[in-house]
Amino acid sequence: MNKTLLLLSCLILIFAACTDKPSTAEVNEQHVAYNPENYYTPNGNRTTAEWEPAIGTQVTWPLCVPHNLLVELSKDNHLYTLVENEESRQEAEMWFQKWGIKLDAVTFLFAPQDVDAWWTRDWGPHGVFNPEGVFQLGDPKYLYATPMAKAFCSDSLFISRKLVIAQLPDDSRSNVPPYKTQIDDDMTIPIAEQLGMPLLDLPFVSTGGNFLTDGMGSAFSSCIITEENKLLGNTPEAFFELNESLLGITNYHILSNFEQPAGIQHLDCMMKVIDEETLLVAEPPEDHAAYQVYEDIVNNELAQLKTIYGRPYIIKRIKIDTSNTGLAAYTNSLILNETVYVPLFDIALDAEAINTWQEIMPGYEVKGFTFFLDDEPEEVITQDLKNHYGDYGWNSGDALHCRTRAVWDPEMLFISVKKINETSEPGRPLTVHATIIDYSGKGLVEDSATLHWRQSGSDEWNVIPLNKTPHEAHLYANIPPQSDDSQFEYFIEVKSKSGKTETRPSSAPNGYYQGGVSGQASIN
Image (tube, rainbow, N blue to C red; front, side):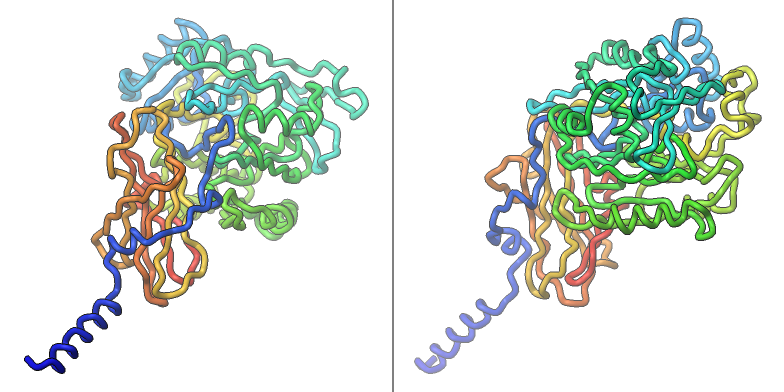
């Protein structure tokens, strides 16, 4: 070969090497400037979100939910059943066996019960991790059953219990003795002892149905919550300071009251936090008095908020309509591990509600439950339950979410993903940022933190190890450059030396995040 041909061959090889697209491994190793704002870093205590890994569900006996819900909860996870005494335990055990509930899937917890024992969501404990990773049961105050308010945040509270109304005017709220529920407030103490979990005293009202959190320092409540805290002597400023120091809530979003003309204003009957960056909000019929109220909250309040990652929330809607018990509270659902449990109201929209949940939570199993009291065994329906609800067990301000509560995994694998939803230039790698905390303390299996991705329509997942950053809980990986018309899917998987494996979203690989170089991400 002469010198000219040799030189030409070398130039061709050099040109090819320079123009070849990098391999997946090479793309993943490309330098990404570390920016802590792309990740979540707990600052002090951290309160768990509803969808985080749970070991079971807490419910109360005597029966306050349809028995087929108990059956499903026991099949899917573990059933922690609160009973008042040994006689109550034996009664529950007898019925559980009749319904086919395996007793090895049940743990009975003993605690005195009063008038609000049904509502484990409201008086029940929050899950809180301290900076050392120790799980605690946060025990807020639940002394009044149950404060109600009219539409305006400045309206006086009033207590309704057994047809007795106690008005609480602005100038004498602390001096009026409404119905006290000290027994229910104290239930968390024996529960913590029997579960072997430390108790964290919370000296403020944080009613579970009106406290929605993303698990990353953001929380949502209707404005009745600050008025309830005034009954305890907590100013709004003190309330927010206590939430930050004890629950790690640094972004507390107080929304307008939404129930018309009055109600307990528990936000879980209007909306749901689906993940770190997605909200599900009910949508009443346009001719309903609540329609404009909900739209104003969505457009003037929720749409103005930013996620932990500094981006506007993705707001999804679920249509609701009137039933025999008021507006159907489809957002009053329970997300537990890979299942969504939805209350149904025996109206035409029930089927559409299930479809909506399936659309926003693909890969999850969505189960719907009606609650006709006449369909339940007569022996397990108490007179109090009949007096309170009449013929139907769910209502617009109190449904499935209100009467169940997760028992979170104290050694969970926590994962948060900053999803790709920004416009990216074709031909550039797409970075997925993940915060991973192993609360077992045993550490991650080497190279087990992985990004799974594929182009839409493909059956095969590409697997890329996550790269480390200066912060041990912050990792990232790059999806290789995509063309300007391509769509792709991805999820994160992590394994701990404790034997646990977790994914985000939890339903992966059946559920996954979806993106494109010019499209917004979503769960699919």
